[in-house]
Length: 100
Length: 464
Image 1 (tube, rainbow over the protein chains, first blue to last red):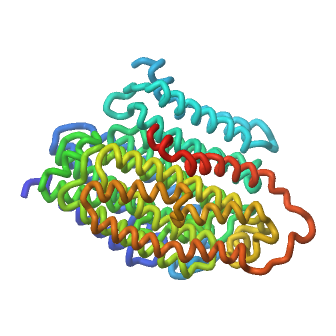
Image 2 (tube, chains in turn green, brown):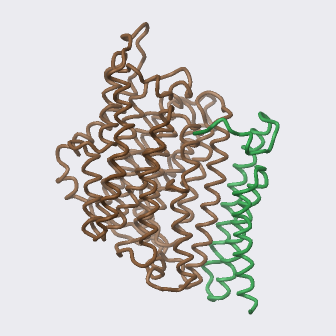
Image 3 (tube, each protein chain N blue to C red):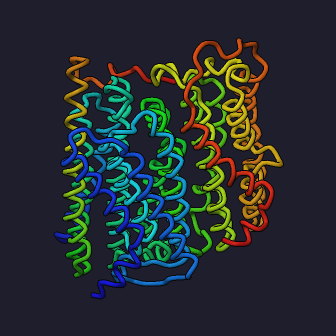
């Protein structure tokens, strides 16, 4: 296996790890970290494939993905802060006012 | 680079951008800003007019070749989305009339929708998708008065699932890009005919991403929470504008090519599950907005169903459905009685005997419910008929029959609302009359096109 396909496999593994994390972990911060892991796995795949296909479009998209990920976290962290201030816990299971 | 082309081809986007800047300036300069809704209404109406003009003149341009293009199809889609935003803005006048950040976020989200509908490459689709959803996460948080815990929960759930969808979308794009070496939308249709595992994985991931964004079973879990946690105008925005923009974008990505290969079954089975489960789960809701959320899950199923048909019929069916469905939801939200806070406003049993207290509101909700259920003379029926006609014409008779059966499950809970409003006893309006000016205007803005669609469906369909 050459270097590029190894990187691609690594990206897919990281993505799967992040996905499983979002689903099974109940700590809100860990869920957000797993979400970021998924995003960065996609970035890694984009860069690897940009190298493989010898084009630049994928690498450009990575920069935009960085900006979006930063914006997303900038919204998420205040949300978590506000929730923790009210509930005194990071456990997503405790945030169960909405059900049905 | 020709500046004139950029100014004309991006007319709606530019007007929205101007609106955002003006609103921000107002927020900075004026110490206690008033009339933010009026300003926002003006800019959205101007943007919608620009889109209609571009459509009417058949304007075609490629200001950023390969990334962004304006053609009559995209102009029409933009004018639909922007026009649907006008009643939403009217609805928010009561709760957010002087709230400038609310309107800035709303306009940013609309900007994202416009970008999405003109996209030629996945890069632009990505930008548009994120610009559409990021402001909505914050809008969900903005409750009437101060932030409530349930709005916080709803916003966080929506954000985590939305972020997951974004990551899934990016990975799908990466895989498509690996196969074709370009980010253009045509790599999607190209991948559909290649029996390569990477292409198939990419298509499945892309489908999942859009299913999450449009809340299709089994990726629907965020919708009821987000719809219930948000305040009424924001729920209306999510149920109509966001859903319409996502579906029209999917339409643009899929293009006119017929669906083929292994993907077809997934494109039929999950929406079918969505129709059935959405209608079943809606039956046991006690909150109006949760019910609308499950109903919107079912309607997302119908909209994805429309993709099974081929080319022009598909475009017509989705566009007509989006307009009718959006207008109906807005009509229902405009008819909702006002409450002291959002939570009490939204309990279903508060609608009991509404007809005796507020005839106009009850009638509006009644029309909306009958039309959403697809009862014949109303446009909701025509929209469903168009979808199923196309699915049948494309040869998926089994799926069409199953979907039709699923849609009848929904009639129960729509009629339950009507029964609650009209057949329960209730005292006549007691005490002070509420000021319902904005609600009445909103209802009329929605009702007139609905009546037009009900009386002249053929004329409207012939135009698109």
